[in-house]
Image (cartoon, rainbow, N blue to C red; front, top):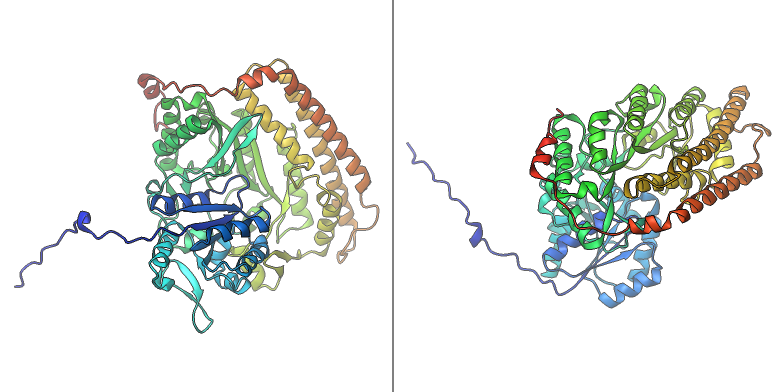
Length: 575
């Protein structure tokens, strides 16, 4: 019988250290509007290992980006492409950098490059590689290997062109298993401000357990090996919030989690531990926060507890107000659940915003009518301005693949299109877009609906940060009245266009002249009236309370809660 073989334990203390040449910097380029935590995590990971990192905003003048690269002569230039619609803009910057003699390694990451790496390398032949899926460890290894002058083509988690011109991929790198091993992200951008209060983004988790057909996020996290959803320790999240509060005066935190950890008993316990930690540290009385969740995660008791710990704004991807639309989008919720979630948030006195796709590839005149009815129902009290869009078929999504399989996909990467199955729906969409969408009632920061929702956001902030302002109830009702009137016009336009579409020939590609009593000129005029009334009311109220609002900007020392009070809150009592 053979002797048993003993297991040798590796002595990590004697493991040879990785040799790094950190003398040459790394330049990262991407969108910084509202903060790009992806770039922040890449930068902090590289810096933790001794590399110098600079970040350029993709929206900066190209000449400025080129000048920065010429000054630094970076070893690597990493491009973070969040939205595929901007790939040509990225390509132009890449070409300008190469023309300026920047010879470092160019790599690109993000959802589109990860899921469509062949197309990315085809569209931008000047880049050397694609960093696929979560990039912290891949970019670090690329820097180590290139810095040592070794062949980078064996680094896990990349795609590149081989000597024969064909795209090659290396073995996929697993998703980061323990998010708490990552350093806090660098935030070299200015915080957003609301009434002077500074706001910054952060994340408590990565990944999404759901499988919506229109979303590339779920495909992104399911393609790479590893656990799909990972949460940070609540104490680490709160510690990051505390440091940002004390060091940078941040009072508003915007959670960018794809789906905040709430659904199911494990994540609900996580949420309650997070709430208790906010109370324990004293942050619950000093900061407010916003998060994203699904309708089936809303529970009035839990959300009241989160509200009392600073939650003030909830974003929900409602997406559709009819059952067939929800099935097409694979939301795995019902219209009733959407309606219930909105009612519960109102019951908990929480502000909410929402995503909504008035049109999807399966839309009919009846489904659009049901969507309009749904919006009328949830917005009847003026709680929020109506917003909606048409579903866009992103690369890497099941719905885009289905449109392509059935021959309905049109356009290109930067502007993917599709026609509706019913010609009259195409006619309705064109008519509505030309009247409402093009000139800015709904889309764009300066459009009416976003402005109305921003003022409602300010009201919620004032109620938390500066409670008891005289006349707040009347001011709040005035803003709701303006919002109701704005929504009423939108719904009237949509109702008239729907009626015209129903009367039109089934093969009609355009609605007849006079389909609605509202002309573009009349709508522009009415929109401007709403904006003037809104801004007059808003500026008058803020001006009246300027002294109190300025006083509320003071950053006061944290006062941790007593241990007994914290324990009385019942950590994890909601199963």
